[in-house]
Picture 1 (cartoon, protein in one colour):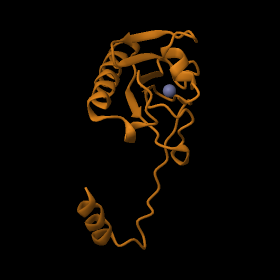
Picture 2 (cartoon, helix red, strand yellow):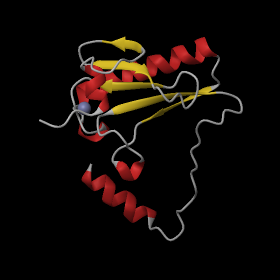
Picture 3 (cartoon, helix red, strand yellow):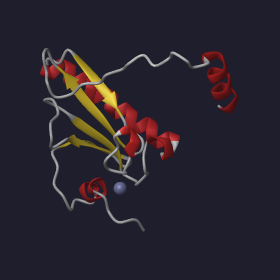
Picture 4 (tube, helix red, strand yellow):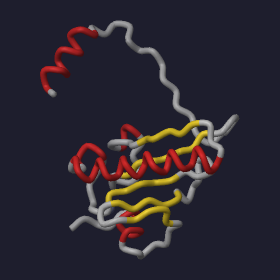
Length: 137
Ligand SMILES: [Zn+2]
């Protein structure tokens, strides 16, 4: 039995949340930090470390809810876009080791959130890299 993380405590009702959706497998609620207005978290009710270790059926249910919240928030809040984001392991920015998906609505000139993607392809052997990954799928 793992020590309860903050999401397990929210699921157990030990910590309150602003609930958006709940069924047998999935819970969605507002992120208390509100990186942007409407920032939501969708979590599997069972404890899995992250997206990569969540069984496919439950992962799909979490993603279904994230999609629906993104659709509703664009309409309802007038967001111009939405980031659907899940981090796997601390190196990728995962801070709570319980599978969760961020739904982050984006607005004109919002300052809450940024992703930078630099081009680091130089020096990589892309055909070899693609082949190696493909052969292991
Ligand atoms: Zn947990």
